[in-house]
Length: 320
Image (cartoon, rainbow, N blue to C red; front, top):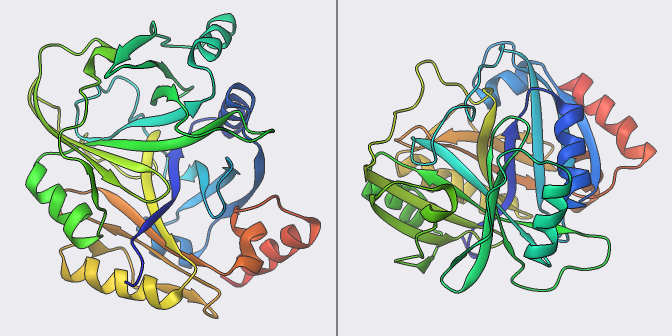
């Protein structure tokens, strides 16, 4: 690829779309820009699940071509994933969100009796705390690295993974996808969730728009993927790497397949205006790759949808 990869989506699966949409929109003050219903043969192929059917909502912060995506699956019937999991258990393990004033936002969360709220603690000279969303996804809250514009109360900063094998994850996300190393020994944030004495390897990777933190725990020993885990289960689902250039996405796809990722299906193209698929790395982490032409941003959740966008969405889904 001629440009470094860029995370353009962080996705979660929820049990109640209306409740989760309201939670993130109202607490973090980020707008919902649209939504859709995914179903049909193309959806089944891309997501790798027979009969895959879900309702989706999209929220945006202040970045162009970036979204926070929420799925509520009707089929397959989901099971809990985030509920009861510990931050060191295998899987996507933590969502990071930045706010302008950590203390003021903590007071806001306390006033709203937000679940799982911890005290503010200082890590490497910076204030953080954690909370839980309606499906028990662990959310790390920290100070915004740069000022937030008017009308945006927060920014989606990153996602953490707990992996079985550190070196294999580095091959997948650093060498194959191409995420540069931001910090080879990032600050240990375990104190935020009262982690017991831990032995782990960590790295912070640059996903362009958001970071990825990769952790391999030897102590405490992590639980493996739950038996029968599927990406529709309630909790963090995946991240997506996006581009406006179809050739870049095709090159990334070839590199990922050559590097050990297994696609659910080959790249799906809609007249070369949208190109995408889901792939799974050797440790079962789902990653989407996605190209969207700017004129379809309102259809695909990368700007506020209009009446035209909503009509076009229905037409495109009927043809899928």
